[in-house]
Length: 387
Ligand code: KIV
Ligand code: ZN
Picture 1 (cartoon, protein in one colour):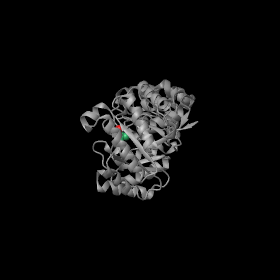
Picture 2 (cartoon, helix red, strand yellow):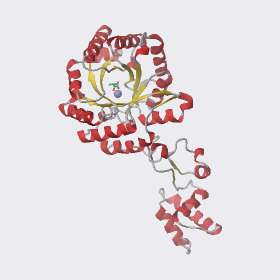
Picture 3 (cartoon, rainbow, N blue to C red):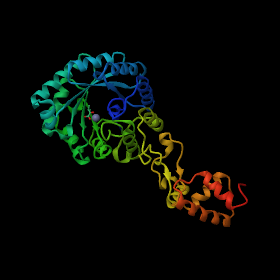
Picture 4 (tube, protein in one colour):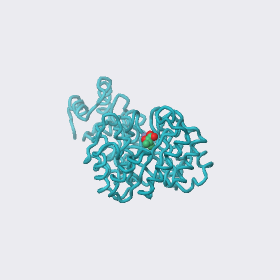
């Protein structure tokens, strides 16, 4: 089984979510939890952003000892110097350099032609290598870059001494097939590609970040980048736990897995949500409150007979407590009876029929049926009460 390296950028791209700003203590708390989760590479911040950011990255470096630590830098000497300062105490540091390569960015943002992009990136990588044995180079907006030029950029990064080349879908524009083909071409055409690791980094503007990341993995990338709960710029980054669980659940298809401690996922998700103030939608894949909740009678009946009828992942796998059978108007007798047993009621067949009919009337009026509602309904209508 091929190992896929996991690069977490919750503390950098994730913190770029509008309205999110983490204190040093919060960054350290999250970084330590990411280490428990078994993340291979943790991007702790963007050192040149502020002196406070350098201090936060240094605080993370002092505590995290079992993951590679990175800080982002533009291809400027002063940004790289800030990373040197920030990662001074890191056990296993890596400089993360970024420069955009697409025509839109070259023309309107950077005012650089192709030759200038190659020269600027190469000299930044060479400068970075004076301080770091590991350098990742990211070609920002790679998915909107001409493929021939992207091959040249990748070759330049390898020759200049990068150890990882990351090709992002910065604005979430790619489609899975197109994005997979981009990596296929890079792998087949760039001389020396076997000397480095290839990485992918996607955004979710069209809701395709997970699919695009998986397409990149199917086409040979060694590393994927993402954030916990998918937080990040605009619509967010690739949701790390979705990719990890997709690889775990469909290893028959991908033949690749992460080495994450999956049972730490739920705890990590809750911590990031609490500290960033970004709530997780109930129907969110893997970590949403409803991800293991079943309401319809048909589903509940299936679940009571065999959980794998309607669950492809168990809540225990991600460290969540247990599946929930939620009582509502779609629920059937089987689940209702199980709930009564849970609450300590044992009804005769006829009593059960009456109670179930009353429950259905109540469920038409009330969306969330709580245990108290069921107790009230039974105590009102069946003089026997709990046995
Ligand atoms: O989205 C992006 O392209 C980035 C790079 C810095 C990797 O965040
Ligand atoms: Zn990004």
